[in-house]
Image (cartoon, rainbow, N blue to C red):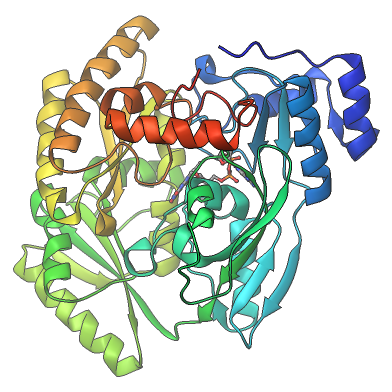
Length: 467
Ligand SMILES: Cc1cc2nc3c(=O)[nH]c(=O)nc-3n(C[C@H](O)[C@H](O)[C@H](O)COP(=O)(O)OP(=O)(O)OC[C@H]3O[C@@H](n4cnc5c(N)ncnc54)[C@H](O)[C@@H]3O)c2cc1C
């Protein structure tokens, strides 16, 4: 166990000397929002001693050097939309918020890249690309609030990962401040590279435990010109979800394949107060199809329509894009509206195992008598299973959830899956990580952490326990 030091008046003065008085938050009211992310259970919240808002990599490096010298933990924070308590300062210390580093530095329409600071909102990246008739493919449902640096730190997925991959695939290179306070550029604006270890890929998805991302060079693409959203309604979960392997086998690569079970459709409908198509009839599969031309898109849509009907769909529509994506993206808020405290599982399994996984979830949910809401990025095997706590007493909730998770993840791992497809491990899933990850793999991760961060000052206590 590292005995971290508290922030003394001398440390506070040193921090003020780095970023100036104005960009230090030390009063209770203004510190409170930095004590949590989007996890609502207050038992997972923890107040930072101070919040520091640097404006460039040089200042970040100075803060990190000071933290090493004084043995004070530092937790990098983006927009705080995380769902794993990754940005929660469980040992107090400094929250280093990247919110002031929010500039788009370059959009290069000729060479198809964009250079941004980490505090740029993801939808601002999308809008800036679109202005140049270009496309940024990262598309988490929280895009209107999360930061691009947070997306890289969590390797965020989202709706378009089926075709374009996760945030990792959208990044050429990163500027990073190491846990010892050095500034380094990793990766390159290259289509191939075998030049030592791919350290940029080690940083991506490391949840702020191996370095602080201070600049990103993002990959852009020409904006797809022919896009259609399709809604297929199915009478049962099995026929809906088995569409996924069917589509893949037929060689159709949709941009998105999202699933919402019927209780979730109704929950969202109630939350957004808008009637959704056939919400009383079945489960949704939302597909987005891109085509090289209008004809190509139409041909693919006809194929999808036929496959859905063959798979037992009740109906297949060209969807009202705005409405259907508003519904899908409101899922998390609708769940929160129903039950402020809820379990949020982020299961990922091989795509061909998703029907089997859904059947096992139904069996387990029934066995435990759980009230669930399920939406998933079905096309990439990622299932968001939400379990509502409702009025269950805390002690009973903790016990039931723990027993359920034990059985659930035993099945997930048996099917070749993992604990988290995109939200990360953070603090919330740390115990599960210790329980389910291969012990040798965990030991390798611990060795990397200790080698890069010998004083264990950067986001300690996340992903796994090192101490
Ligand atoms: C309504 C809703 C919908 C969501 N939908 C999706 C979705 O579709 N796909 C998905 O993947 N996630 C989704 N999320 C989760 C969340 O939005 C993502 O994990 C997002 O990438 C977090 O970004 P952030 O800026 O809020 O990071 P934060 O929550 O602030 O931090 C997340 C982690 O990244 C680290 N971190 C943040 N910035 C940096 C940095 N610059 N350098 C180093 N480490 C850093 C933090 O220490 C922490 O461990 C959703 C969340 C909500 C509330």
